[in-house]
Image (cartoon, rainbow, N blue to C red):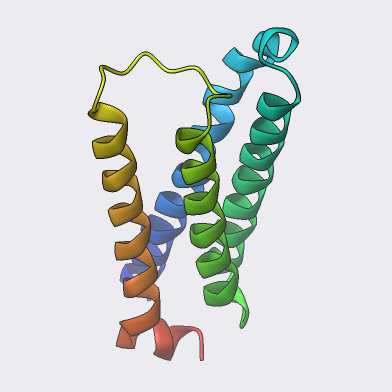
Length: 130
């Protein structure tokens, strides 16, 4: 039972961190709203919602609630959409060299897809949260 809790905590931590990264970078961008406009404000709000959804999913997974996997999948999809919106629009500033943004976005999407596939196909997940 202790091993199962450790594995669940690890999974929850990963989901929380995926949402939390957006929240940490948000604070540095608040001053930019006056310069970049409403588009940046919408992106920041979406990142805040993604972080909150990730935290809710992590807590739900830790508490082994029936809707935990659905909430975690929704968190992953929403976080991926926010990443796409942030990288595909000119509203959020970045300091990446040309061409790297596409690679970083691709790696981020692979990360979300891998976790989504794990939550969808894992026998352990389906037996734990059935």
